[in-house]
Image 1 (tube, rainbow, N blue to C red):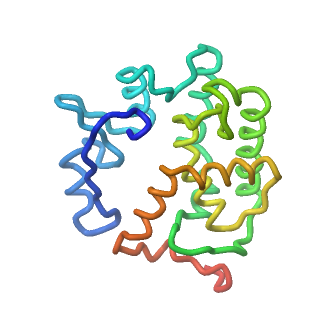
Image 2: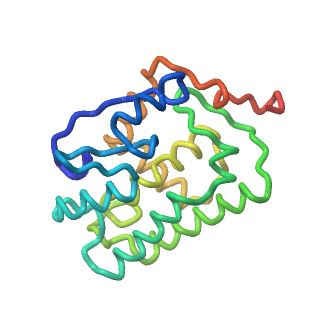
Length: 203
């Protein structure tokens, strides 16, 4: 939304609370977030939201202008959106603390390897699709927004990565929107205990 340049109001609904589903259903028919409400239009899925904004704000640079580059970016974003389940389960997001030392099984390592391969391909073949810059398509785009949660997970759990991946993560972590997002997350008062894992306890 901030990349689109549109003004908007944000409503934060704490997850995994007794009334979370009831509150979410006020805005999203799927009872899942995020959801975007624009007048009579409701879009309740991340990729759908990006596509809606890309059509509404074609000059915002959310996707590359070239059809081939745009198709690649969409495919990779969809892979990110619906995939990497072993990684998501093993490396939960937690922006308040560092949690190094988690043992990585073959499925999780396979996800990490695939993500690094995507980042390598972006840096090798697609890095100027949206202008010059250190991000996957050059300038920060919807694709980087989709991978921001992965960057957060890798940062929290101090995952060993190749040099190019570390450089990309450094760029994302330094982006003003990422900094703002992380700082806002640290100020949230609620704690989801299942994500407060301790790798030394076996849990």
